[in-house]
Length: 594
Image (cartoon, rainbow, N blue to C red; front, side):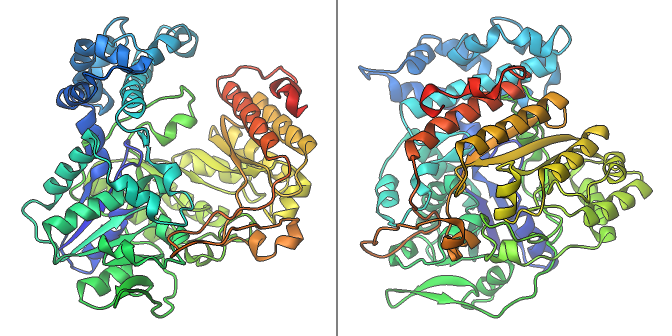
């Protein structure tokens, strides 16, 4: 059999899409499989009476403890008593518990809950008991996470693990050093890996690594698998290696993995199962790293996911920010799946458009896509879907909406789009009738000059028109924005924030987030830096390369960008709570960025 594993940490409200997609492929190929979400397992081990007891044991006897740990120890009995009902409530096993969780005094009065207390009434009012309880219970789990981060493992976070360590890590040395650290979490992860392997003799163990925040966990899991099953072939795949490890040259990686798989993992997984050198993968031969390119495979739509073996009822619905759009990422068990492969636009200059997962687009027929949803509903009982596509095209969404309406859609869904002219009032109304409740999309620098420079293919006029169409249909919108793009001026950044403020004030955007521009190795900007006024300045690498993605480049007034980012995040956080919309945007900026 093939064992598919998700390492910590990814969001704990739903399974990440990778292993269910591979499981669907293996199902269609009649290959036996099992899958386990060790990210969820680690969270549930921490958020348990036994986990809290072990955490307390690791803290006792320490002379200097941060405030978070002192409060935890002083109220330990209250923390331990409350953790099981809070988790069961967030798993929706016991919804009536909301009345107790929302009562003052049921949860220990920690630092996050104390700070939130005075703000909850205007957010939830008299009748929002369930939402208020969900928010409080989420903050309670965040407080436990704070204790872990502030004491036993400074790299731990609930949706990522050692993320900054893994981002564009040219040398493997820091990660190998970190692997030598032992904490209660590392021990629990070994035990969870043991549980996943128990009673099974997998021929192949495939570990997905979608983000930098799962790399450390992936190496720890692989090391344990190797100790338990030395003859099994262990493969690393997913978004992180497909983006960051394309120049891999360090043979030490293969002390943990037999293969590092790039791009679509279906064909390499089949090769490993059949005992062949896996295509589009790195292996080690005679002490050297070797790449096996394989033949070019025409892109095809993704298979229907298979969630067999994943405990869908155990995932945690978290509401850490009481914003109706922003909470969709963490609240409720949305089944994550892509409808298509690749991006139908694939022209944005900042994006990794040269990589197959962006470049090679294949969209399904609407009939087949909708049939997949009904089959998933029959298999799981779930009716909520998060489409994880790079961007859903208006044409595909039009066809799927028509098909869903014709079949009487019982589904609720959302996904990523481009705010382009194809999203008309009529299409937005049909999407809403088919079950769409929200969309996310990039406004990027929210400036027409820069949108044209980065070849985004939208203007502020078309974006606002699309946003108004969605709002008119009752569909919420989240906007991604960017600052620090080459040649962007402070005046243009302020103008972008003003555009966003207007969108919030008009009610056409409900949530937003600012990203700082990063120059990546696979983007059109790096392929032609002179056209964008960029000067790359990578330092020579000492020793064999591990990862490469983010490329250093000359940034004018980098410290100023840090301050600008703080201002943008502060303003947007307030906008998401309905505050500060009447302030001039210049009021959000510190004096040193005026």
